[in-house]
Length: 232
Image 1 (tube, rainbow, N blue to C red):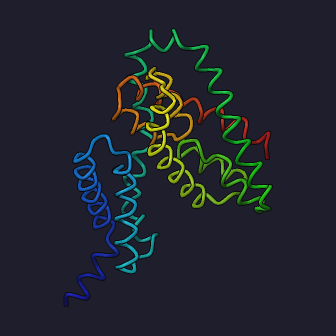
Image 2: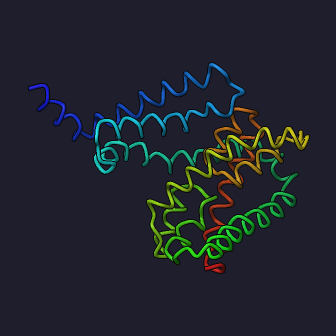
Image 3: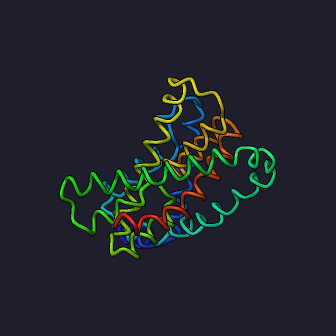
């Protein structure tokens, strides 16, 4: 009886939707215990916890994603919502427009170009190269780019998340070590290199950093979709 109930629950999308939310709330609470610790990133903690649960319970990822896809759908509206702080700080953005555009072009070209260069250097297949190239842009855009280039969107999603987590962990200590105190510059660099996860970290550090990180994430998504074809 109990076994049959468990089998039924594991195939129910609502179980994994609720489970994802519970894990996220728990990870957020843990992260709040040490707000300045980048290693306690709630996204990283949530991914690790859910991965362990799926492995121990023997649940296929497709069964899990049947419920989690409702949260995945909200990624688009959440990205659009970043336009609200942009509107509120429009004057500040205008005053930094030229350096932002310069940094955008250099950062985007460096992210795509270096990835393609090293992927080819190590002899990766064209499909893998196409999957890795858009790693520094937000997941929804990166997966669409990868699919259009005959890449593997699932591999792209995994690399995008890994890139974001690494950026969220490294960016603050690195900026502190370089003695960069301008939060607009710090945030823009974070969003450019590590998209949404970096932006979430930037908002936790400073609202201005979060604002410029969100701008960088949005602009980089557009530019990456345009230039990635040049490298491939």
